[in-house]
Image 1 (cartoon, rainbow, N blue to C red):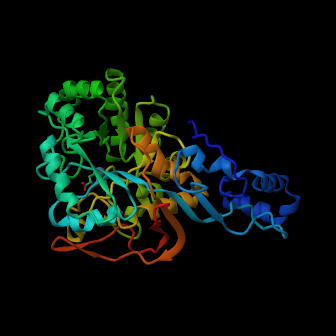
Image 2 (image 1 turned 180 degrees about the horizontal axis):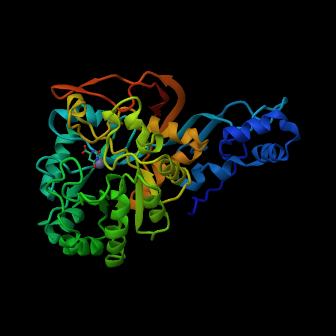
Image 3 (image 1 turned 90 degrees about the vertical axis):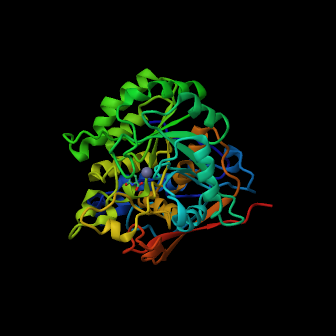
Length: 440
Ligand code: DOR
Ligand code: ZN
């Protein structure tokens, strides 16, 4: 994988570049840190690593903000007198980054928009809006109408811009699809394999039925967004993404070498390795929940329906691989929350719906994941820069500042006729994001 290269002039000490050592390693070093050569080397590196090697500046990003584009304010220097007992990265307490985008979100429709649109517009400049309504959003005019319904709920002054997508069916018309792209009615097409997930019954029944549409999209430069799971009941649910990658995605890239493809909400080490090793036309989005928890969370002391989503949570080794990719700075990996609200009663049910609502604190949850491995400085690339670059859009003007601050997660919030239970509502949030006033 190729970490994004950055450069600049700032030389302030940060400790965010070092991985958190294992508990075992920490206990070994803490016995006599000063005499440990690894400790000495790490301290030397922490003191001398220039901030600019890790953190892009206004110069490198073309940002309009005054001075440093991303500002990391750190805890007291590790280099001060009195050697620390543990070799641990210094934790940054604030981060200012360009207004991010959410490249995969479910806003739903009707009364739901009153909850979902302000939640996403709070910290994101744009969002790719999933078309899996009932009936789905299949044409340019349908996308226009849906955009107008969303627009009615955009908080004044937020500048939030929904980016619309079309739902691919067996009968999608190639000319109409690319005409919607050319007219700016839709930025991408979403492929749901029929039966793979929520509201996917109108989805594609066989990939080859989309040959003509995909060819037209390839010619037009219109991206394809994938729900990457096979639906064969004989395939174990935990293997569906890996089998999709091997049997559907790999041949699809061979047939359409110029088609831009985003493998969405990647959940496995196998799939993320495939993307990282893949061509420049292939990208991945990652959700905050797949970066923060593994499948054990679904069964922690009982069945936990609010952790159930599709593709389903995977093993710890998968979560670790996703987090490593997200924090690597790789330019083809970016933020897509897959925030997917369902009424509480439909989740806490004998047959609960798939989907986690994270939009109430999506950016904060990503910050928590990045901070857990001392990689907060990689968040601007992942959240604000890589997505626009892949889609050929400018980075948003304006900034958001994240501050390390504990605040209670909201409990159930009113939603439609009942309530909505945000994801991980039983633990406090650890970061808080606020929009900054636009630079003068
Ligand atoms: O968990 C999910 N929920 N995965 C999806 O692919 C769809 C989403 C929804 O719309 O609820
Ligand atoms: Zn989704």
